[in-house]
Length: 301
Image 1 (spheres, rainbow, N blue to C red):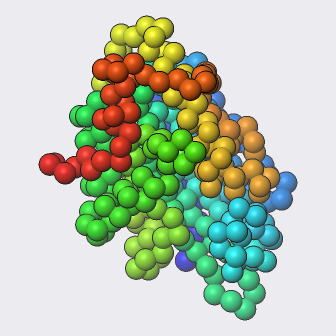
Image 2: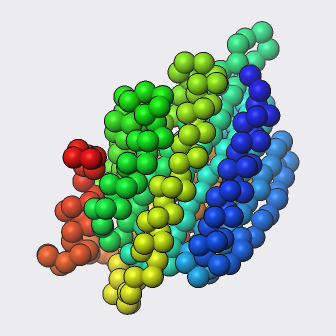
């Protein structure tokens, strides 16, 4: 098991995505290296107040230590007391234009070790799309690329990981999905190490083809204050999920990760309203009725 090859891949993926997004936006990302006193560190690539991205963060982290954070040992109590190593790339892009969706990607590797015992390892990750104004062609395209990333490994993975994504990115206190989903997987060590690693790489490698065409199609759509106001309201759901449910956010904060890097996923402008409902028949209402439904976008594709 060569973890150096995982780190090399993740750093290359981070730079590839950053360079492509710089081409689209026209402004450079800040590249910020950091160290974790307990062990490890990372590189945060951040763009704020861009031409296209109001905020974008592409983070690489590689951390290790002697004791698992509570959020991890609670999920896998048999790993308590083991040393751990975790590395990954995680990104969130919040476009300025309300017609361009927010997107999230994460690909990661985790290993827990103890003297005299076999290491426990797995890969995880996925990508998901959060539109503010829904377009069926965008949803179909995004899910089509997600399926293409997984089909070479097993045609059962896309429906399985799509369902996992719908279940994971669900705000139980709101009884609604965060967005139109994508794919999500965790604790993945099927086949052997190379098989699992290759699957994770395929997910990372397909990200730009899944998202960049959508962003370029929507980023110049005319909009006004009404659309920006609704975007800010819906962004509140993103904040609620990340702070209440997201395992990566909890793991990062509880493992004394760098808060600035972890919280770069938060949108820069957000609004909350008391018991607000969209007006019937509007594009805002259609987001709820036609897109935040967990539907099978590839049923006829």
